[in-house]
Length: 89
Image 1 (cartoon, one colour):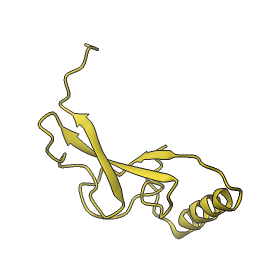
Image 2 (cartoon, rainbow, N blue to C red):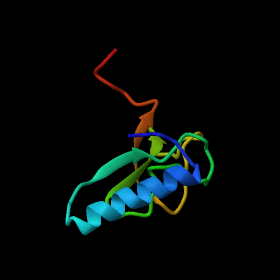
Image 3 (tube, rainbow, N blue to C red):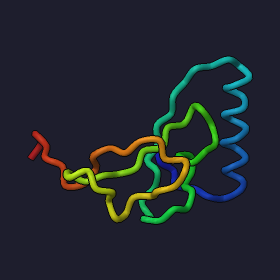
Image 4 (cartoon, helix red, strand yellow):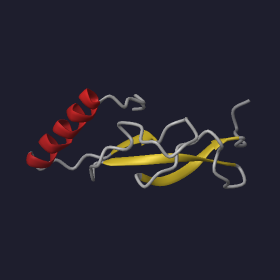
């Protein structure tokens, strides 16, 4: 899921959603792109402050940060996402 929202209304909805999961004892992992603005701003839902959310940044085929990828303290992992060799033409 990559909604790329930053409005406080959406942030409140995500917080409430993840709080409800926590209270229900759920164990669900959500994975979202960190964002594509190339800065350190928070993009949601990837930057939601929840143990249920994994934020993924982009690296190129040489493991360098992609110029367009978000980078902040909520990013959990980086994955190949640019100039990657594929079996698909």
